[in-house]
Every structure is written in C-alpha cells, then in structure tokens.
Amino acid sequence: MTTHDLVILGSGPAGMAAAATAVAHGITAVVVDEQPAPGGQIYRSIESTPLKERRILGDDYWHGKELVDGLDDPRIDYRPGTTLWQLTRQLEVGLLQGEKASMVRARHVILAHGAMERPFPIPGWTLPGVMTAGSGQILLKSVGLVPSAPVVLAGCGPLLLLLAVQYLRAGIPIAALLDTTPAGQYRDALPLLPSALRNVRTLLKGVGLLAELRRAGVRHVRNVTALEAEGENRLKRVRWQCGNDPEWHCLTTPLLLLHQGVVPNTQVTRALDCAHDWDERQLAWQPRTDAWLATDVEGVAVAGDAGGIVGARASAMQGRLAGLGAAIALGRVSEDETREEVKRLRRDLAREAAIRPFLDVLYRPAAHWRLPEDDTLVCRCEEVTAGEIRRMAEQGCRGPNQTKSFTRCGMGPCQGRMCGLTVSELLADANGQSVAETGYYRLRPPFKPITLGQLATAAEDASE
Amino acid sequence: MFKRLSLPDAPAQKTVIVYFDGRQVTAKDGDTIAAALLSAGVEVCRTTPVSGSPRGPYCMMGVCFECLVEVDNIPNVQGCQVLVKEGMQIRSQNGARRLG
Ligand SMILES: Cc1cc2nc3c(=O)[nH]c(=O)nc-3n(C[C@H](O)[C@@H](O)[C@H](O)COP(=O)(O)OP(=O)(O)OC[C@H]3O[C@@H](n4cnc5c(N)ncnc54)[C@H](O)[C@@H]3O)c2cc1C
Ligand code: FES
Image 1: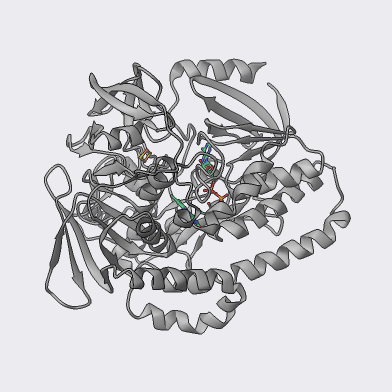
Image 2: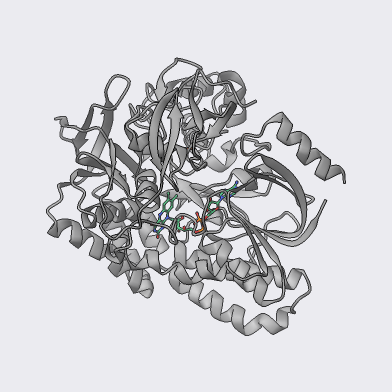
C-alpha cells in the first residue's frame, strides 16, 4: 500500500487552501474530490461554467479562481472524480475512481468535505419536482440548467436568497419566494448586529441581495408557517399558510426548491468515530476539534464547513490553519516558526466568523420545520414517518440506533444523511431529553456504494 | 421542469447521446447523468423498494441517493456524480436493491 504524507478530502475552499499551504512547506498533498472539477460547493465548475457573464453568479463566486488555479501546482496530486469510501483510525484511505477502487495510507489527513443542506421534511417533499435550492444552484453553475417555468423557492437562509438573485440576473422568473424565517427572529437577532458588523462585507452582501429582490418586484411572502407540496406522482401545487392566518394559499408550479440552511456533513467523521458535539446555536452536530482543528483521532483534522458552518472565506482560512498543522505534525516547520502567521490567521478567522451568531439566530429554522407532523416522511429511503419515530419513543426507544433496528429508518442508501438530524431531534423532543443525550446513528463504511469486485481490488492493495 | 439557458457567449458544447431505458437522450459534454435526464424532461429515475413511489434527483450533490440508476449494467450509480459518456445505457432502478 502506498503511503502519502498528506491526504486532503475535498477541493472546496478549505481543501484547496490546505493543499496550497502544505505545498508551501514542501509537502506533496493528495487532494481527492468526487466532483469532476475543483471548487467545492461555492466555486463549483468555476473553470467550465457556461455562465461567463460574471454578474450572474457574482464576485464571491469568481473569487475562487486564485485558489482553483493553485491546484495546478505539480506538487499537488489532485484527483477529481475520486470518492472516499473508507477511512480508518489507522489512516488507511479507501478511494474509488471510476471503476477502480484502491487503498492508500496517509501520515496525516485533512477532512474538508464541506456541508450539506439541512433536511427540510414537509408533506410531499419526496415528490419529483421538489428539489433543494442547492440542487438548483448546482444545475445553474455547472451546466446552465434553469427552471423552465416560474419556480417557487421556499425556506430561509442566505443561500436561498442568493439563488433567487442569481436566477433573476439570469432572467429566470420566480413565481414566489416563500420565506419561513419566523417574524420574531429579526428582533432576536438585532442585539447580535453590532458584533456582526465586524464582518461588514458579508452583512452588506446579504442586505444587497434583499434589496435586489425587492427592486425586481419578486413576490416575497414572509412569515410562512406551514408548507405542503402536493400532486400525484409529481409536484402539481404548493400550499402555504402565513402567521396565524388559517387561510391556505396555493400556487401551481412544476418545481419547488427547498432550503433551510446548511449543516456539516458528518458522515465521514462519524464513521471514523470522532467525538461530536451538538451545537445548539447551529442546531447541528460538529466533530470536536482543538485550536489546530485536530479531531480526537490522531493525525486527522477537519477544516471548513465540515467542522461547523463558517462560510466560504473562513473555510479557506481554516484550510490554511489545518495545512500549517499538517506541516508541524510532519516535522516540516516548528510551531514557533509559524507563530506570526497563525496569529494573523486566527485574527482574520475571528473577524470573518463574527457574523455567524447573527445569521444563526436570524435564520434558525423554527421547531415545526425540524419536528414535522406525524404523517410526514422523515426517512426518504425507507419511508418512515415522524409519527412512527414518535411511537417508537413511546415504546421506549431512546436513540436513533434503536429506531433504526425497529423501523429501518436510516438504513437505506443515504445511510441516514437525509433523516439523521430529524430523527435525533424528534427522539429528543418525544423523550424530553437533550439531543446530545439522544445521540446519532452509528455509521460504518463504505460511505458510498461500492461493488464486491471493487472491494476485492482494494483488498489486494491493503494486503500489499 | 428544467431547460438550458441560451447563452450567446457560452462555448459550444459537444453533443453526447445516451440512452435512458432504451430511449435516446441528447445530452451535452460535461452533463452529469442526472442533469442530462432532467434537461430531457425525465423526472423519475427510480421507484422506492417500500411503496414503489417515484423519485427523482433531489440534492444533486451526492447526499440523498435519490438519483440512483443502473449504468452499463452497474447498479446503484449516483447519477448526479457521474458524467455522461457517448452511448451510455442508463436504466431506472425499480424497487432498487438495498445497498447492504
Ligand atoms: C449545495 C450547496 C451550495 C452552496 N453554495 C454556496 C454559494 O454559492 N455561496 C456560498 O457562500 N456558500 C455556498 N454554500 C456553503 C458552502 O458550505 C461554502 O461555505 C463552502 O463551499 C464551504 O467550503 P468547504 O471547503 O468547507 O467545503 P465544500 O466547498 O463543500 O467542498 C467539499 C468538497 O468535498 C467533496 N466531498 C465530500 N465528500 C466526499 C467524499 N466522500 N469523497 C470525495 N469527495 C467528497 C465535495 O464534492 C466537495 O467538492 C453552499 C453549500 C451547499 C451544500
Ligand atoms: S441527487 Fe442526491 S445523491 Fe444524486
């Protein structure tokens, strides 16, 4: 089995910055990403997007060019189209590239695999025609695919507003933006505004997005408190209620894009059995890390949104920090020599992150968006409803691993990625215990589908 | 539900022909399988093993597994993560096998 000094998972801002930093200290880094091209979520397809008119995707998107160009360094072994399907505590790394599975060993690993959108379980969310805002943005950036009829966007958070504006700039009509931000949260977030002003760039950007939507006359429905997707075999209509008003409003549309924020994708860190904590402000699990972003597993660090949502710029800064950590761990530089640089990085990080508490409070999804009614599916794969999970709690299930063995909830192809947060929160709520006490699914590799034939070739690598 | 933006300044993309359940689909070089199917108006790429309900791509980023299809006889391929190739035979997965 080949041994590499450093394996980095993900070629988003965090992974690319980590690689550039490592290379600057003479480390050859292997960077793997399942996407066919670099950039991660924010800079997806930056080299190949058909949307060359810079105005549409905006400056923050094109900002990624420098980082992406950095991957061309011959000392970086960048492997696109390569999926990590296994990672052990001994730092054995299982990779799958096309049909070819392999195993390599790493001396140090930086996990920079990013975030995913928070599950948004509403009635009808499994109907074809209901997708996520992230998926809409991915189709836009990567291949210029856009809704063919006026689209309904629903939920909350900066990414939803950003997509709305990107669609507008591309000339795509928006039937309505159904905003689920609870009315009271503008007031709740206000006290956090002064510290958020330390990152005035991001704050102004958000304000600018709202203004752009208003100027364009987009139908922006606020304080939406109930939302349903309807149709037989595919989406036909979206229904919603506002505030305490019992009246239902309705729009016919072939496409509904949902979004209520992003959360760390903890699939890999869970399977590695890293310690995780429940972050009550971000309503999400985070792998536990130290000041160098190292996890409790020797030689493994987590950088970027995979470790807790910090945003793209801070993700790159964390990537640099983790890259320096790797250089120190591999003996290429002493902690002393990096002191000044680290001090600067931490200061920049603190300034960049100053906006997070404000955003987290403003766009915190209300309880009923996270704890759906009994009839709503929470596990898309095995089709388990919220009611079934609550019944399991009544019968004594305390944690998600128990409901999993009774209902198969979380056992389908997505391995709980789509239901895990909801199930933990539902059980915590039903049992009157904290989410931290309730816990999360125990996960095992492979993280991604792999055939027996592929496994056999990887096993040969491992035995060499 | 999706169409391609017409962009005057976009570089011309090569056409790639693939097949979905035997039907010819015209895709563009650089499309993922899921993007190609969506652009061709295919909304359902699998049915669930529990109730047989229809599903289509949901996240496009590799986390929901709703886009699972069979590609050139290999089952459980994530359509949103794999690029189209000329002549690819894509099949919908009905009552898809479990992954294990
Ligand atoms: C769909 C989506 C769209 C977003 N769009 C924006 C945006 O337009 N603007 C913005 O400011 N923020 C956006 N974000 C927020 C995003 O989290 C950014 O803050 C930023 O991209 C985070 O950088 P990162 O380096 O931590 O991770 P990412 O940029 O997410 O990069 C992680 C990379 O790891 C790869 N990866 C993950 N798991 C594996 C695996 N098992 N094997 C191989 N590769 C793997 C992924 O393919 C990805 O390229 C988006 C988030 C999502 C989920
Ligand atoms: S559409 Fe979600 S995994 Fe492919």
